[in-house]
Every structure is written in structure tokens, then in C-alpha cells.
Length: 201
Image (cartoon, rainbow, N blue to C red; front, side, top):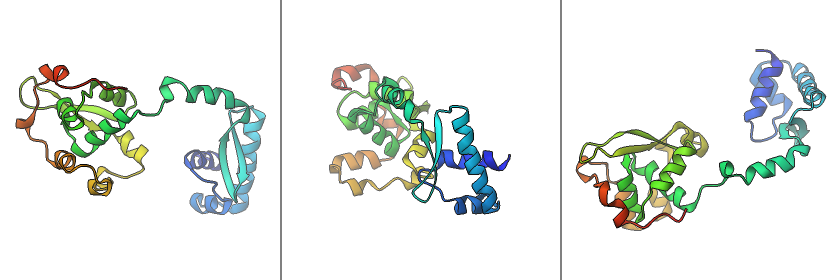
């Protein structure tokens, strides 16, 4: 891979302006070469009317979306595909993250409402996935978080999740979330809809 491609890849994932000196150190290239490649990359984006622009700002280089693309980006941000997670979905995601592997019935029991729609939303976003089935009546599906969840959270593993005590939920919720999964606790899902309210999301 050539220097320009390497720089482009680094800047694509960077969340702050990256100084040329830092890029030179990471790529093990001379700083002059890196500076020339950055200027050439910026010119290349402009010449081919790319949706991205490369600018030197805040003491470093960073990729931005093209200003003329703003109306389309606003439209995309308002679309269902880019909608933020609802409170119900966030609650459900928290339960799955701390209790996994967990069944829909167990999630609903902890939240106090049926969580099927929230789980479907989280699956659609790629944050939660089916990871197996639990022994017991009906073999309910077990859910767990995905690699994307860990990536979006900005941690290396689930072990880095903050302790529940830091958020001070009710004692019974902490107990329910921290209790290890036991097959004997599997809830019969046949009466689930009768026992819980529907999510508002």
C-alpha cells in the first residue's frame, strides 16, 4: 500500500485533526513526504469532486464531508435508518449487555414491559444478535451483544463495561442483572404478551 493510501485510511478513522509529524511517525515516512502526500490527497479530492474534503485545521489534518453535501446528510440523519435509539431500546441493550446470554422473557421481566420490538430494533442496528437457545420449555432464543456494540461503545471487551453500581439503579434491578443465567429461570413466552405492556417505541 502506498503512502497516500495509508494516510487516507488513518484520517478516515481519526476523530481529531492529526498533525503531519504524528502521521510521519506512524507511517515511518519522512515528514516532507507526508506533507506532500497530504496536499496531493486534498487536491485529488477536489479535482474529482469527491464527497470528502481534506483540510488542515487545528494543527493537523482531518477529513470532512463536502459542504455541498449538507442537505443530503441532513436528510439522511432524519431517515429511519439513522434514527437514534429510543429509551426502550437503550434499556433493552443495557439489560442484554450486562445479563447476556439472556432470553426475551428475562429482558421483559427486568424491564417490566415486553421487549420484542426493542430487540428487533437492536438486531436491525447490528448491536444484538441471536447466540443460541436456552434449555427449557420452548427452547427460547438467547441474545447477546455483537462486536459492533463493543466497537460503538469504544471499549476493547465487555469486561470494560462500567460496574452497575456506578449508575445506581434500584437494588432489585442490579440483582437481576448481575445474577448469572440459569436454565431453570427461563420464562414461558406463551403468556408474555398477556403479562407485559407493549413498548412505546
